Length: 257
Image (cartoon, rainbow, N blue to C red; front, side, top):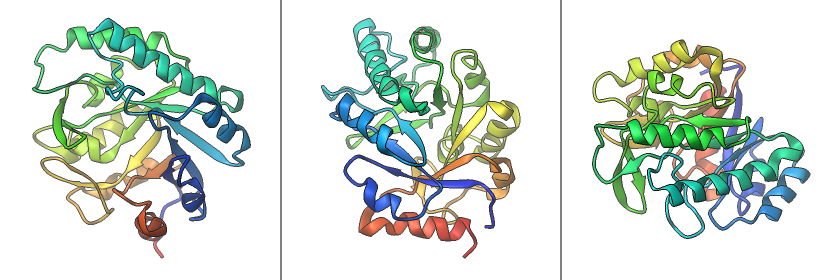
């Protein structure tokens, strides 16, 4: 899979040295729930290279970070945490990837209140956030929950005036609909166009297995030409283990070596 795209890997403050040693084109720092503002800022200020921040998936108290929550206090706590992360990177203009929230135990057929909450949250955040699309099923602490927001490009367009762009997660797009996942993947790039600023790339298997090694799942990879010029995170599940063995294999496949 020869590719001119910029390829990166995910790291945390705990394992960034291992991941950086893989000679990737950029690093995406996943902020953990307990990471402090000074720690994040220090890393951003000292990192020499292209760096993207990824907001934490949980609040420090263990609740999911949920910008689409209809619980006002929960939503506001989520906004505060994302603002902390964006502030940590603002001196070096690091973009921040955020999840929309809207996660429930069972599917919610009326998402109007969640969407209104998400728009309120996005409006309160700095303008250098990239919103990530979600799959139908959301895994959290051993439970399989339901994502109700941002599963299709049509939904993403509803908030494109409030973000700097979108992060398209390919496996999420494939698993974000019940019928033709490959069509949903292609639509993300065709319909969102230049609003796509960043990509999370892995393979997937139905109904809810994401982070599969590229080429080992069910996704039709003919969409790859759309990724030219974009920072593409190779988001292989547990790719950081064993000295980054999974990331190395993904890089090898994408670079055609």
